[in-house]
Length: 144
Image (cartoon, rainbow, N blue to C red; front, side):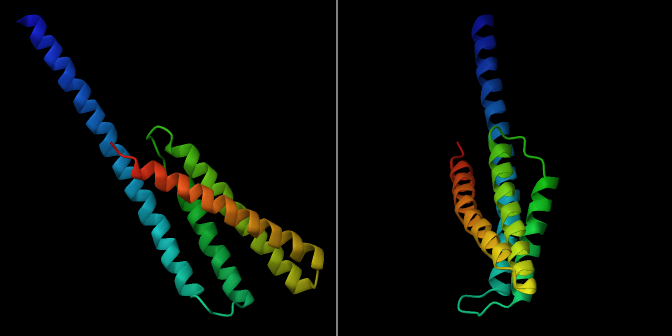
């Protein structure tokens, strides 16, 4: 009887710990999604589809991405495997900010080389951002 009670207690404790881990993952994913979605809304406001972007718009887009990068850097993610995915996403955001800065300087100074390098960085960002976002979405949708 005592042995059965110990086994049941161990099973209940394991289930409780698993639920706690799942709850933490849900909480962290919700926090992450809320912050990323807020930036997506700001980006849509700055650059709605079909809008001819001006230098000020590009600067505002870069500022939004930089703000997201900083906010994600200030957050702590304890769920196993989430922090590396967030770090990968932050790297993509950083490349976008760096690329837009180069594009703006290239346009401002008429420097084709800076303009070209900036555009390449932005293209690299888009690919990395897509990959990073998809990895985060997959991670957060796989909650058991």
